[in-house]
Amino acid sequence: LTGILSLGALSAAEAASPLPPRPGRCAPAAGDVSASRVPGRPYGQAMNREGLYAPDHQHFFVARLDMAVDGIANRVVEVESARAPAHTEDRNGGAFVRSRRVLSSEMEARREAAPSVGRHWLVESAGASD
Image (cartoon, rainbow, N blue to C red; front, side, top):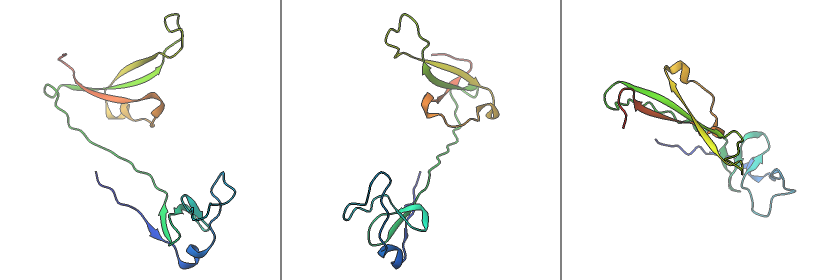
């Protein structure tokens, strides 16, 4: 994977104008420009007083894996974590369980990101076990 640092320059007038306070602060500290919004540029922030500007952005990483585990008879298993149901063996309520689901098609595997369930996938042989 590679990355490109996406930066730009503010105009002289933008760089010379006073920066607004950051959320949760009354006013920027002297010389503090980190995470300072620039009036008229709602999608980024000033990085320094010399006019370096960084736009807000996201990174999306996609990978295609061609796996051959013990040949071509493979399956993809989705694993998610969840809090275990309350029971007498887990008196403190801190136990987790994992659920496994075999994904039979790419359409079945489509879903929204859900970091709270610790989702991951296993590629395993459909015909052999360890």
